[in-house]
Length: 306
Figure 1: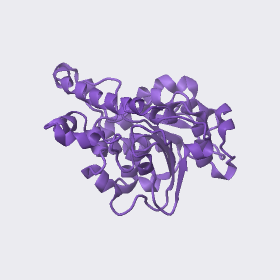
Figure 2: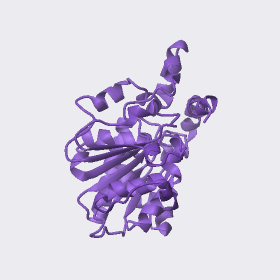
Figure 3: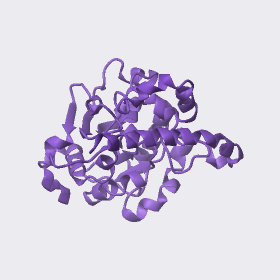
Figure 4: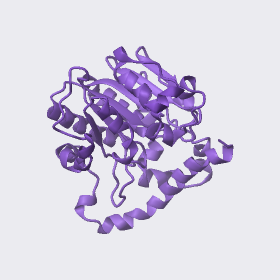
């Protein structure tokens, strides 16, 4: 990918963040149902909110995990995404492989429809905690496996570390996760040259500034080590990532970590930040391996066929 093309994603993200600054006027007249979903409300309304996907076997709260796949899989979308569109390929793929699969929406802002994961990330982790409690109650399982893209691969680490999530989680699989923040190809270094820009982003899209490398949130997330005992970690990254940069910052350090560079599995795979988490079948095969390592098979370019 040409360098100027690789900057379009980050620039688009920053521009979209700027345009969201006009939403307070919309939020002032929005009905109460447009307010951010609290952790409690998210758990109570999980079945109704995700009912549209049950026809595909996904978000089916009558699903009971099998002996072969005893843990439900919770999918956690990325910034600006939602719990449906991020998983249109992976969720049915996992259902076809015999898993009970669930996805949530989180990090909503007042007056901002469709685009989620924009609120403070610690609050989003609280929503995840309540959602997982609901999944465990519905399925009767003791633990879940979590698969997340971008912010969704990083945010659960806060749940594991600070919200007692490790006791309820077997594995965390992060696809292009912002584990140590991002420089957006160096664009975050420009913020000091635009007085008020960082405050503007923080006030209107807290999740963006939370994910800047060196932010207070990222510092707290990683203090004392990247991982917590008892959880199996997998990170799948692409060297063509143009959003979470440098891509090596996505990798974790710890005793139970498997860091995977996609191009080491298939050199011909040119997926960037979005496609690695939404459409890449080679990645999906590697996710299946991480969920069921006892029955893993080699992931190669041929895995694109499923």
